[in-house]
Length: 296
Image (cartoon, rainbow, N blue to C red; front, top):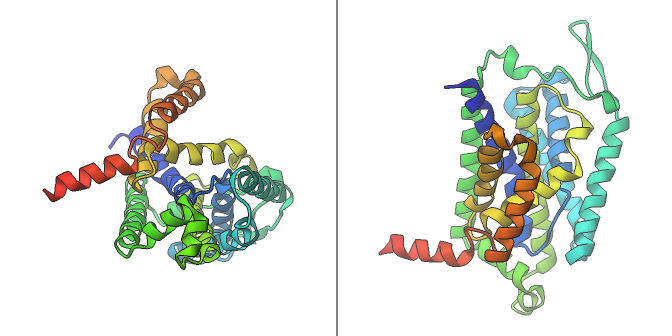
């Protein structure tokens, strides 16, 4: 397979985790501009675990996922009492606090004669487990794809167990949901934990693909894009945010003629889709129609 195509597909897969994390919160009725913080936490935690502590790759990525989920729950606990623009600003503030902290975070060890580890604004180099294990870009893409497929399967299972329906109920009208016996605060904290874990998983895989990460990579625009992916692709299914990533990275970034105008085209596309389809391309109505057609 062409190396450029593998690179594009890998980026689509990795940012799909970030898009899905923002989508879960959108389903729960909240807009978060801070999912890049958990992406960064997962990336740094996984990188430290594999490069400095010499943990196995799977355990290192799992550590980044668990830490992202834990921090997500801790942030969601006070933030769940907010809503609307106040929630969005709180998540954005947390993301910027995380990025500022990483700018001064230094934790290095001597690994085979070289200082390795986070070095503040200079970044974190030599996260080389994938290369030392001899994993080529193609098999690495397979790891990313299988991880993403596993996440989608878990979301599908949650939908079958009525978990997603209850989360949508909380997102549509939390007061009515509470009147029907739904513990709204628990659901919002759970959604925050799940979203943080998904972003942390994507960050861990991203760090090992890139081998180098720095705080500047986890900027506000990364969080804005994560929200936009769900709004473009649609809120009716987990495939919606992935469709948004495909449109942005798979189409706009792959067409080199549009490279200089990518942000302009993407911003215009978001505006047009939100006007024509406020719940995105794959909204709940379209998904219900497709499911009804498939059953027939």
